[in-house]
Structure formats: structure tokens, C-alpha cells
Image (cartoon, rainbow, N blue to C red; front, top):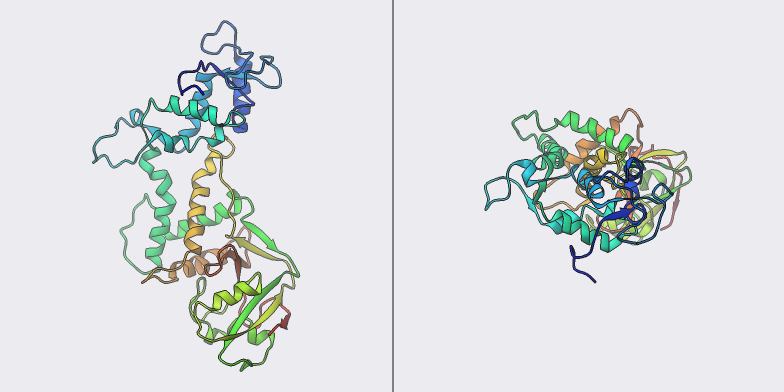
Length: 368
């Protein structure tokens, strides 16, 4: 295979580039003119070498025009040293300078059937510049710093207010906007009849309580312990999608050798904030998606933060406050609970429903 930069790359067609670029590539092709050296018409592609009609179903544009589209997409996240007026130095500039391999890692959305060969030539073209994050990384950090400030707020720690960091109140409003309007599928329905499972540990083989829905369900407020989404003294229904996961969850806080498992059935459809599988990765080369990039990127990190185990010295105050002051107060789509990844059983899922003892939507069978 020819080394990068040593093949004659002149054009690329809409089969070889990513689908996010089709519309703008066709506009460029429609405006092409045989006498225009900057935008001539092309009847072939340097990567697939398939003959095509210049105005047919599949069109080709010049390599320079294609790279303009690539640079335009990358500008959502990255910028070059020359644009910053501050090329990389030995330090002290406050910027994170990226290798060309790291920059190419953002380019998958610009590539279709051209595959590796097209990415290789993109890498060669991008190598003429040095790169850093857009706006010194501020766009990437805006909501993340808002979450850090929110955690300080939850711990009653003083932090000097800055107009550049969203306040705890604005952070919660922004979180609602992201999950309601930006990330598809974040608000879902737990359908009527869905089974959830809870375990209650006990020291002896036979339970020392009556096996009823009230006894196996949410703890009464006076017995409710500190938990991921609710503080001590506030009863909520925590359940798992299968018996094994609910048992794994109680192993984290009990030394009892036995447990009784109860199956609970939702008696109506419930609106759920699903933080278990946020799969929206906006394409920065798609003008209809690129504005979602930072919001979706933040939500991915936020979901990981919500689901991770606590480190020494940490507590649940921040996630509890997100629920009590934010998620339970959603206005556009009021939610009944949250679906989230299990810490104790990776790949399995739990629910917290905002229902206290005696109010969980359920009928229960003792499985023993």
C-alpha cells in the first residue's frame, strides 16, 4: 500500500465520505463548474475509482473542498495553534496540545466506505497543523465545572461564584433540558406489569418478619437508611430487574447469610429517567447534531459519575440533592423514578421509584 501523501488524491465521492456530509457535498457538486479551478466537476473518486455522473446520484467533490468540511466539523471541538495565535511551547500556555492521531479520532463521522484509506489521507492533511481544544477547552468543561460546583453546594462548601460556571440552580435546569429535549430515549416508560425485585436480609433461615409487600417494600421513613438517591429518613423504592442483582446489592451492606426476595409489579405506566444506557453520540460533522455535542458528552460523564462506587471520604449528598431539588421537580416530563447501572452487578440495572413505604406500585409474591 502506498504511504500517506504519496498517492494522487484529488477527489472523494459521497459513497466514501460519511453520510453527515452528503447534503453539503452535493451542494458543492451542484455549484461546481468545469472552468472553476477551485471547484471543478469530478466524474471519478480517488478512493473507489468508480465512474459517475457529475450530477448523478453519487457525486464527487475535490479533496480540498472535502477537507474544508472536515475542518468545519472539527471546529466544534478543536482549533489549530495558528487560529489560537499560540502554537505549542514547552509549557505555560495552559493548553492541551493534541497529536494528529488524537485529532483523527474525532473524524469517524466524516468517513463512510472510504474507511482506513480515507482516514489515512485525512491524517496526512491534518498533520500540517497543531491542534488544541476549542476555546481553551472551556466549552468542554462548562457543565463539568457546573457539576463540581453543584457537589460543593451539596457539601455546603464555599466556592467563589463565577459567572463562567453555571450555578447549582441553572445546572439542574440545564440537566432537565438535556434529558428532555436533547438526548433521545433518556425519558422512557416503565410499562404496567413490569416486574421489579427487592431483597430483605435476615440472620436466620426463616425471616423474622411477615412476608408481605409492606415488609419487603420501601422501608418506612424512620428506618430508611442513607442511599444513592435518598438521604436517611426519606423512603424510596429501590428495586432491580432480576433477583440476582437485588441480592448482590444487599451484600454491600449486610453480613446476614439469608434474604427473602419479593417480586413487585408496576400497576400503571411510570415515567422513568433512564441513566442506564445513554447511547447518543452526536456527529460533529452533521449540522443537525453538532450543537448537541457538549451536552451529550457531559451526560455520558454524569451517568458514569452517578453509577460509580464511592471512594473513601465520599458520600451521596450530591446525587441525593440532584434528585430532591432537580429530578423530582422536572416540569416538562415529571418522572416517577430513575433507571441506573448496578454498581455491585455490572451490566445489570436498578430502579429507584419515588414511592415510600406502602405507596410502591406493586403486588408482591414471596419467593423465599
